[in-house]
Length: 182
Image 1 (cartoon, rainbow, N blue to C red):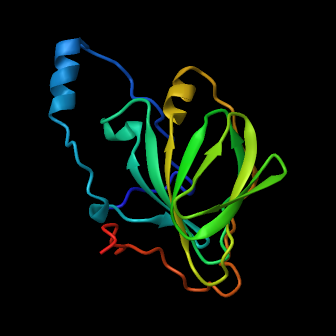
Image 2: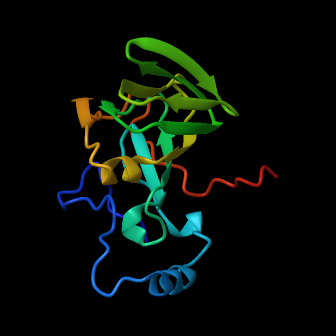
């Protein structure tokens, strides 16, 4: 039940749902109230790889929200994502592992329990500092709202790696992680 990744998809992306037809507050509230209020992470699957994997929980195409994009990122041992920039802020709550960010050429280290904040208009990249253990972050951003306001800047500076990090060949994202910390 995983969604196609926005990183590798060839389809046009939907950033903000259109308001069309007979639109009224009553009808929209009825539609929203009929939507599920709990998204089961176990029913979604990771996409992408081989160094960074994504699981998208909430984005406008789902019909639940217009202003939020929330996803889980998993970095394979020694993994990194693409170097990129965008106008919207993003907050990464680090669930496990340790790593670092490079923001506009400055390194910021993080570990489980930290929040890494990417500010507006920052060229950045995320790295797993461990060559043997994965790292995971819950990412929350208002990207759809920025795009809705026609603040469209987003640029990939360096593409996402297409080969596994040395020593992480064959790594697959952890689909069965128990977040109850039992």
